[in-house]
Image 1 (cartoon, helix red, strand yellow):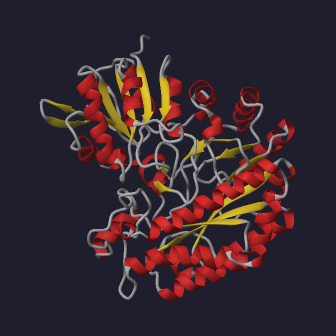
Image 2 (tube, rainbow, N blue to C red; image 1 turned 180 degrees about the horizontal axis):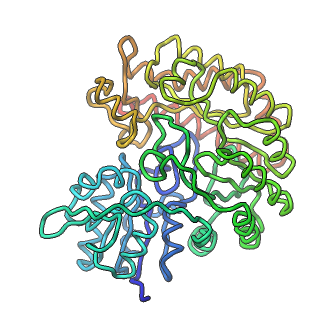
Image 3 (cartoon, rainbow, N blue to C red; image 1 turned 90 degrees about the horizontal axis):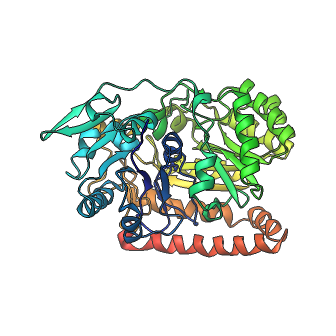
Length: 477
């Protein structure tokens, strides 16, 4: 099969914006942080001779990208709700320098709003809906657009929607993204504040059985059925990754919930223990002690846990499926086993009040995990939260998902709780949590471990306070 010269592109946007082909949090972060572009690396691995360009972490400008893309026949751009307008303008610039190039957009926004995505510019030729791996491969292989499942395209001025493509069931058949990473990316440019550097992240599967109303990927691309590589397949891929990246200090499994099926998680852990790697993963706050211990004993260092709120009423409203007492017990077990936790919290979810915000702040301080992230409820198109916001009139007039600088904005407000107040509580939450003796001592201890860690934490501290100052600017609100 002859493939067209194909470029997979996570385009430039705001400086430091991590909202592209691997991130759940489509906004500029508190400190310089980038996830690996797994969503683009997987189809790139299916297309021989393709190239993956991840512009934001590699500090590539629009002009840099245009120069790189000049000789490609197909360009696949990962877009998002906040960046669609800019991505459409880039598509127009690509088309102006090469009128024959076929330009497609993929991602969560394209998956649920293909008409809107195609309508952003006539320069956009097609959209890959839902899981777009094999859709991109078929376009690169030169198949007629009308014959490709899961694709929407324009014909004679009309938008055509082909039949849906079946979801991928056997992830063991997919080639590893690690070879694409090694070929096209500088892994030293990828930072996550709570992970050891350098790190590598990827998915062992997609989909999440949880029903959280705000969560983007399961409701738009991945679905609610967890489909994943076999434990043996994961072990083979990680052994291969070790050979490719001998200097990596930590591997992160970015599956929506790696621990969704705990027997599988324990079996994978036993393989990872034999490889002797340090690893981390996403987890819900309901993993039992046996699984936690097995993972800890086999190289697990950290869990990324979405606590979301300290109010049971809020958790029930968003269909989190977790009880506060359950989360407390889980956190206690992690502390007992020496497992580090990075906890994430969201302000402005349905039912939020000043009282529930205060509950959440106190709950976070009670849990006292190593580090936290505080974000704002983001009603992305395609999610139940977005539908509820429209039906109930929660959208604040004139508020978008991100500001002109790329930072997250409060898009929702409720009776008695304005979006401005919700927005301001993010900074108050951070200050209430971190400006306490125990968090300060924890961070200080990590800085004393080695000089590189000292420099990293100082840089992150400066970036964090710069971020808070930027949020205080009128245009950020």
